[in-house]
Length: 519
Figure (cartoon, rainbow, N blue to C red):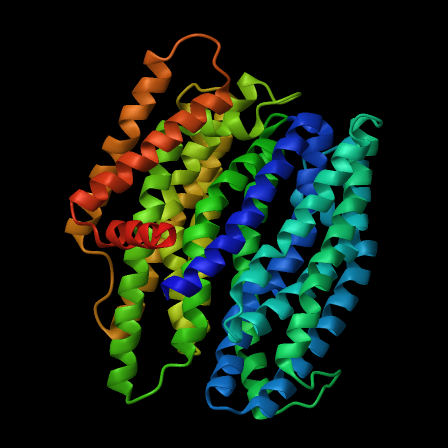
């Protein structure tokens, strides 16, 4: 698990670093402007289709069946399955992309009802440009499903680097030559070009590994199983996306900059989710799906892998939460503070990021629980709990974004951190429901309380020392990037050192791997 998770993590790390650079360059030219709001809001609609039919859905429906066929050495049947699923995805996304281009003016009312005038018109233009790129990203996810099933994890997760680099290059080339509204249009075309390149770089390897993949609509029993699982997962992903859209819609009703602040905070929030939650979940799904033996043996196998995976995720996510709380202003400033993105913007995004930390641990652990359900070919249970999560997100979002700030006499801008905090509370409700349901199927799972207390204590102590040092002891005009680097390096060294001496297994394993690399 660790080697596969490491490959996924490395791929995600490089793509996320490229994403952070992209967001920093974007923040330099757009800040929290109307054009920035329009671009971030416009990106939500194509992202909805990508998330609806992309990696998450294929991981839950396609990979368990395809990986199982490979484990049984049914390579020809596996190739037929990959061919039909690829053909169906291509047809479906083509229809949706064409429909979406014409339906954009109506869709804008759903995601950004607060946008008017030129801001609304710009958002419509951007969405219409971005839709074709969505098709390439969905097909890129099909390539990822094939590569992951063959345990070729790195390429599929590092491919988004090309997408990010293309957007960065577009911003750098035209950023100083165009106004913000025109630049937003140009960057949209750069995003479409990047989407094509992300798909194209994976396609040769996917076709080589898949063998005999060709256009086909021949429904086998395996294809019917995938399609049967596909629908609940699509609905489940759709429900989650609806939750994100509700947040975006509510943010559009808040003061200017709320939509951009939400997007900037999510960029940082999703980094540990992807690096430590997604990497373990993605690596585990094919392996769990290939489990064989008696019913009791399979349950024990899944229980062991799940518990180890949960501990591995928590060891990295808990310090991420503490870092965002105690060092978040430095992290946000180091990544985004440039050009139009000033110190006030940094403080605003930090508050939104603090709200996001409420559900960070729940969302990452919940991913692994969902993957375990998917490995059992149960896609309906996660759907049921995702719906419950959205209901709570909607109700709590309205309460935290609009009602509570007024009751407490706070400025309306506090509604954005309220949105992220409410989503986190809903995430914890979903997590507890997932754990309770899965425990009934495979036995007791979860993190030991003693382990959690130890990791939380180590993280708070390790982050508290550099936070005090950088915020109070270091004076002068030291650049925020330098301060952030000093704080993060000290934090990391203290965290792993204390973890090692307090005998946290994950710290031992991590440091031993580092030592072996240098021998």
